[in-house]
Amino acid sequence: MAFWSYILLYADGRYYTGHTDELERRIAQHQSGEIEGFTSSRLPVRLMWSQDFPTRTEALEAELRVKKWSRAKKEALIRGDWAAISHFAKPPKERSIAPSSVRVERSRDMNGNGSESLS
Image 1: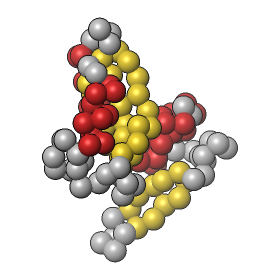
Image 2 (image 1 turned 90 degrees about the vertical axis):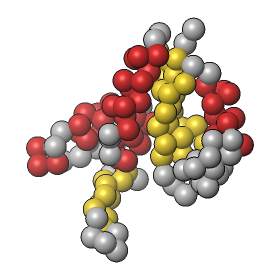
Image 3 (image 1 turned 60 degrees about the horizontal axis):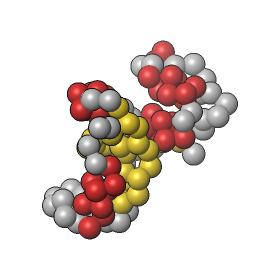
Image 4 (image 1 turned 60 degrees about the vertical axis):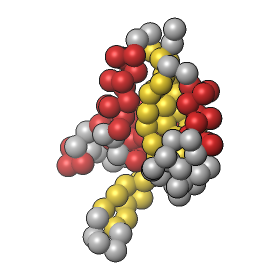
């Protein structure tokens, strides 16, 4: 039996990271709004990335690790851009110039909270 970690993109542009033992069923549950709360108010969802693991423990560990990542690092994972993943794994002060495959956009919201995204 395979276990999966996955990233969904919601209609509002947010990412959701989860894990499951039945990927297709779980995506259908997200898509139908069967899972109440955060998911049901942001439909539709789109599967952006998934990886299978031999054990639930490994899938859960991957989910928890990826959940902590920045948006830019998640987008690098979705693209399979290992140079960018390595770049965003470093603390911001230790990063050299972004890899040539990555254009980083920095922005601040109305509350002054900063974020990085890739384009």
